[in-house]
Length: 181
Ligand SMILES: [Ca+2]
Ligand SMILES: [Ca+2]
Image 1: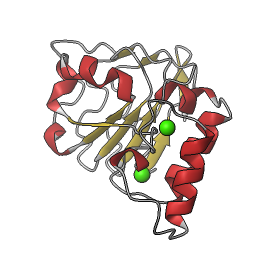
Image 2: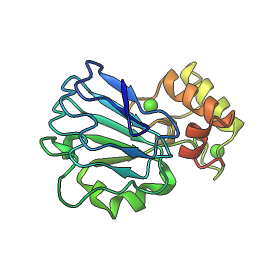
Image 3: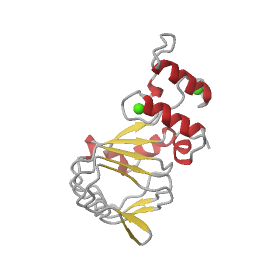
Image 4: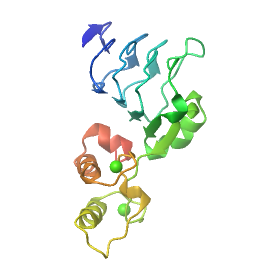
């Protein structure tokens, strides 16, 4: 990973997953150009804009997890996702921000919401963690709910438990995603 103008630059990276560091404010022009192996990318809440042709020809990309409450701006011309089948890509966004994403150019993606309120009481807290843990341990009293897919990847498993635990520990990115701060 090279640095350009203080922001990370991943062009032609051989990695399949990239986690853009918290604090990054802009995905640079051509940032991921030629990263043909890239399958998933995580974008932190600090990102405000996506550069020109940033994801040009990222044909393997299938999941973008984004923690920004405000949908990052995209240029109208110089489509950042040129050559990418965006309707096939899961865009996992904070639950509270999902409608905002649907009203922008991000609506060209398959938008999924991060979950969290597993027992449906309107709050995300330790009770939800307990409920999810029991469900994963096979407790028949704890029924499956959609919100158990805390990280919004389509599966309910230990990764969701980890995600929720980190959010409750006020790990910024995770807590923001579930609107706990
Ligand atoms: Ca709850
Ligand atoms: Ca999940």
